[in-house]
Image: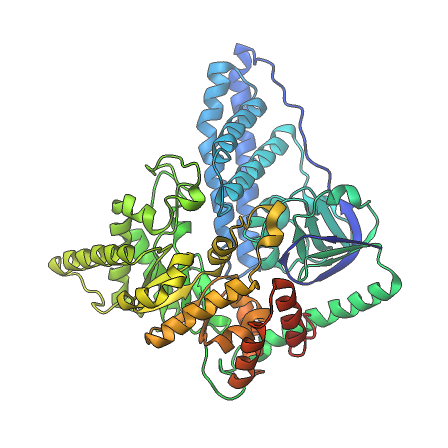
Length: 581
């Protein structure tokens, strides 16, 4: 029996035979195309493009029909945009340089990938974009070579896929009835592949070095997507234990979702807790409501800006925000201003490449540089506020001066709309993300200028721990349970309470049932997470009293390292959710 450890990205248990997916490689014809064959080669390329466009549209339809409410169609809409953007330069290369279409596609994609990987990538945006371009390249190559292969074709019944990496199209092609899990050597929690795995309910572990070498096809393997563990050729006792866990987990998910949907969001002793949803696309709002969300705690607006040449205008944004408000039927919606930076920029951006974008022009700093984008978005949000309960939130705040400057710009936009006779909510609440240590430490000072705080733990953890959460080599240092992180979170919550400013949390921790009880004990009364995580969080909340949670919070702060924190919380949470732990 061999145990491999990696990063858990999609919970659940998968047990089956290993299938090691071969890496797709193509021998690209680099010969010059004879002049008389140029038009025929272009026609062949255009036929391949039509085939790939049809294939991608089929993926979009499959996602829309089978996976409700996530931001997944947007991933493949992006693939369509990439295909269309490649057409002109590829045809030009065939005509001008007489490249074969295969060579032209590969050369163009390699150039783009080189540009995307030339800077640091702390948020993982460039990595996701590289994966998307690579996915489209493989689709075009298969079409040009006349092949029709996919991860689905390669998998056999009851198998677990092992691969160096999986593209989004390979992941969406996985048949959940046959593919019981997957393991990759690369990837992270925020990759498109991880998002798709979670949406399809496929257990997955990534970041296991040499996974494709350490496992042979046909080996019996167990994928534990909750703990980030892969067990190769387990003994009978381990296999028996995990088969029971697998059955229990499936039954638990179904039962919890059904049971919790209509139950109040409250502790065992009746303390009301706000359970909100994180969304990225307007179409996700209805699904969030159906999952029991009491509102939208974080509407990430970045996805609307991913069309590089056409950032959304005021009307487009206004209609998107209004749709979310209507779908939420009077529930509050918190819209985060564009959170983008030099490491994840679109073509209309004007900020020069930076040596360290991780500490560079991100979030509110970027918006101050791109006042045109900032003011347009503020106008759209204010206009939408006439149609529902809107709150606006500024990202990556570091100082009090930034808050004051952002509010001054907002006030100027308010006056502009008033002079135009446009209706909006003049009392729209204004808040900030707490994701930088300086903001967390000075939260009491920042409270004097805002109506609410929202703790973004994904960035806060990596800034506190000085670790790139997308770097597999040091991923073990990304520790949400580290005492320094927990103490800082408690400090922010207490600062909000003393200033009478509500505090919410919208990072990964807020949807992790392991941390629900201590966060409640610290004083958190508003959790915002992926819609599918809400039923489980609610179940945990309804299982404890406030005093029990406070006691857990006190005990966890006595522990000296992340290992003991996780061990303590796992043992505690197992009593509530034995199926998961």
